Image 1 (tube, one colour):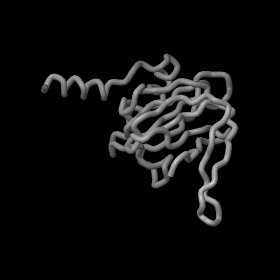
Image 2 (tube, rainbow, N blue to C red):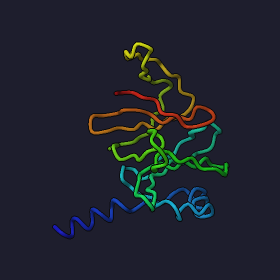
Image 3 (cartoon, rainbow, N blue to C red):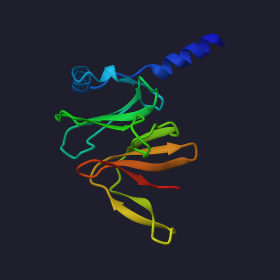
Length: 161
């Protein structure tokens, strides 16, 4: 039993090898000083053209070393900046810790929906046309929202309340 627990813990903390360009960028940017690559969801990273420039980008599961808060760090291939979602930076969903998620996957269909609250606090739903792949996040009940590049930043598309 102890061997199983140790093996399970090693698997959960092991991170799959990133594409070469992303690994180089991770090291040259010094991201390992603040973040640890983790596999709290499977797979440990997703690869797609998230910003529509024709180059494969990566979304990497990370944990902030100082606080152990969970997040996703996105690297756009060919661009110097990184985008941290979650990781305990603040109270908003894309800034807090991603502890309530049980799954993530790529969503590549041309549209999805978003749930909105209108002025009377009743729920409304709108169709969202997608220009780029999104990251679909889920909990134990299923998909709850998507992370989407809107052309200038990553936003959260609510899909359940």
